[in-house]
Length: 276
Image (tube, rainbow, N blue to C red; front, side, top):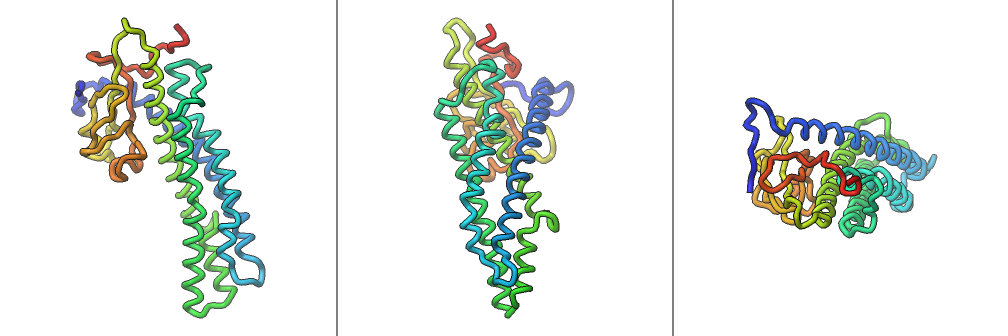
């Protein structure tokens, strides 16, 4: 089921919704990126001290020893900035006092984020161990091995880790916002009275050249709140749905909107249930 789609000419009927989504995404991404970078850079500094003990051969297994510290940092971010992002749609639709923490979808999603982010030490271990292995094979001594590892772990001399923090922030921002929107739509629909209009969700793509062709084609697709969109031949409950294939999920910037069946109404600013 589809609604009118903007063809790139004339007045974009969804411009207010697009601008609102962009502004919210930018604000949330900034906060998550700051939290991730603060945690990641601090952890890498501590790790470097453990791996690069003066006069000793670099120890890649120190990465595993500090993995629990990274998990603690991740859990703090998930309970803080990412949970806040997930809850924004609930505040908009259900009221600021609505407690979404007991909802199954919220618990599941936040657990999935934690499981993704705690794997960062595995990535670091592979990089460190790889450099040590290369150096050993070349017959390098401890100073050169240490220099190799220092290059890997440096938070100032290369762009790898700042870029990694940015990618994490972009991925987790749109995922948390859209997962939260999808679950908030379900909560809103559950409280709909029988005499109120039925609701459905609407796929809104980002209107620029970076948007995937399959996502541009999905623009305007409308489905019942509890049903998936069909995008690129795959079922996605929301843009950025982590259960979908990577080519349809990674760095997706689309958003779902809540609309009334048969009406071209943007529901993103609808009066909250609790405010009625």
